[in-house]
Amino acid sequence: MDLQEFRTKPTWDAYEQSLLKRDYVPYWDREVQANVSGIACCSCRKAPAYVGMTNGTTALGFLVCVPDCGEWLWFVARTASTRP
Ligand SMILES: [Zn+2]
Image (tube, rainbow, N blue to C red; front, side, top):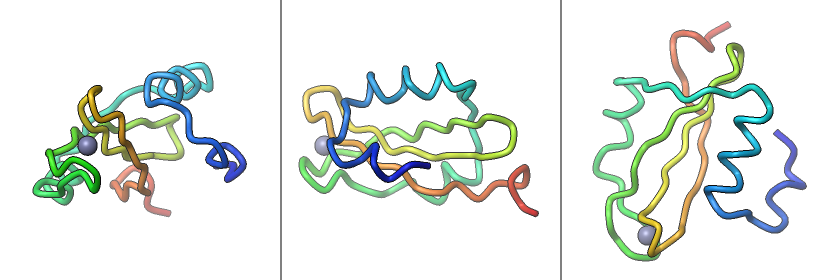
């Protein structure tokens, strides 16, 4: 992950497209979903949706708020597939 990418934060749609172009595919992890449930968006207090992305070696987790809000953040998703 290149921190430069976050100097100007893209929209979630644009970022999702850039991940898909870099061979990331959506995935869903029940354990991660359970860990992030109950988290509220820091700007609108709604519950953002959990989105997982993986390229087979790296799993990324995202919390994506409703389009009206547009807020999103990423976190390192610890899943069985990414443990050394
Ligand atoms: Zn929000």
